[in-house]
Length: 271
Image 1: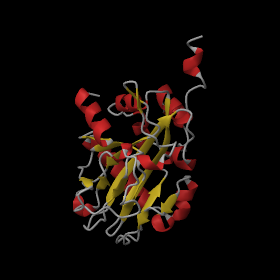
Image 2 (image 1 turned 30 degrees about the vertical axis):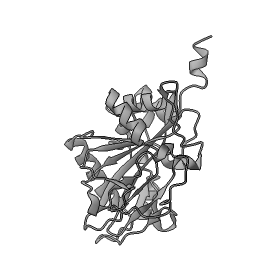
Image 3 (image 1 turned 60 degrees about the horizontal axis):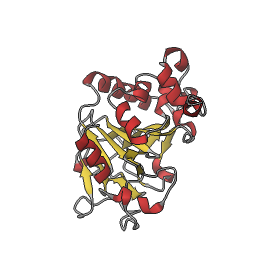
Image 4 (image 1 turned 60 degrees about the vertical axis):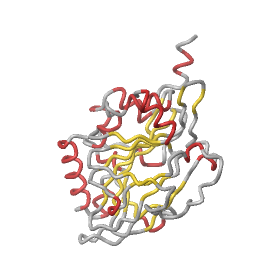
């Protein structure tokens, strides 16, 4: 991280990195998702992929179905395998994660989200909630965050398309966010919409109040969310489940990020 990036991340709770994904890998990912969306629920189940619809998600406002009949959903994308498992240790992102977490780390969640016209996501979290699994910490000149998420844009997303939105600085606020539980209003003075182009990434502290505007355009918003935490933190259910043959094709670093490093490794090396 540059000195300016450290300042902005500490100040706002997020960073935007441009063109993190190449056109080639974007093409591979969108083609893979097109294939997934052509499969029936039974066919997905055979591949251990779970398409979870937003109907019972307390944070989600559900959008309309697409012409293909798909509702808003998310799925455990690592089970698909490549190209999505390549992002587990994406070289552009890893140095940021290592500095933001400053401890042996692991991937604790990974999912693909599809949001249609009418869909949105309410504001949630903020430092005042004091959630130990998402806490933002800066101690003695070092970031020690308990949860960092990366939002990868697989499509261009502007304000009309229901882009990601935050309240800058709320990762350090001592007072409850007055907008928690509401779909972000892009015209509200507290709200910062973050438009992205496909291939961009947003890194943010889970302690930051965040959500998504209502999608009022005609496009489907496609986003990958990858989450990282200190190694002692457990993963979020099946979201880190990988596909068959993963350990035969993965690098040691990638395997360690999924399984977690050996316990107490850093302490043992000091003995």
